[in-house]
Length: 324
Image 1 (spheres, rainbow, N blue to C red):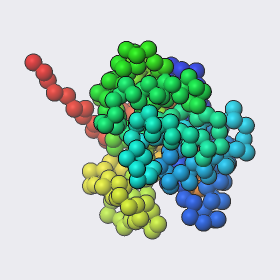
Image 2: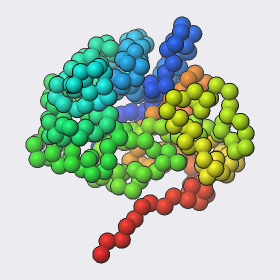
Image 3: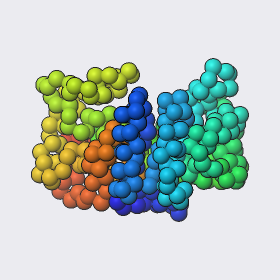
Image 4: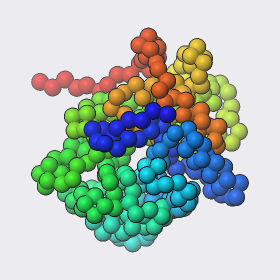
């Protein structure tokens, strides 16, 4: 496993991280498998574990904290997020000072830690002044409850507004973002990566395999694999990605992975890591073998000719509007 700095900052995170969004905890067997997967992550050299207060209503944080407690606090980097409703009250959601402070205290209790390494604003809150949100996050860094803070799914304009507010108010810096990024969704290349590079902000991306599209298990003209996410996911995110265009790209990418003697997932993850602005790639894994396979992408080199071949297949065209 190789490690990268979080943007310009001193924290080192593993190139491959383990996320908790789809961690199954339905029964004892599922808990055992999830525990073994985290153990496999440590064995593979992964030190970054991502979570959120909203995942399984806090149960994901409690489970992760229990497993991580078997390791020294210095051995791992753990993150969480805040924004989504955690109750029925008017202040049980969003990015107000009240909600952030209350939820962070619950997150720390759930994880069984004194501080979280990274803390993200899960979404943008249009009902709260951005100055209020940045101020409380800066205050929490000063209090030692979080070490680095950032945002997740925010637009380039919202991120720029946050950076401006921090500069104007002389706050502790925003250090990291967590956007979606994969071969099927490259929007952060247009503006976001440039903003982060200019400001030394680390980038830890999620959904790197596009909900499973880039694992190669969904094939053109073939039925959905039994038990796959496309057969049970409530919001149908993966189903919306199973377009003819995307499946055609998968068919063209598979021979490249075969030539390199790696699974398509490793090709997709190493392709993301080609960008020096990316600090870490947050992967999901339902079993240890899947985690071990994903970890192979760290340090896996892709030649310029392979990258050119991939770019020709993906055929990405940034949105550009001529002004003037």
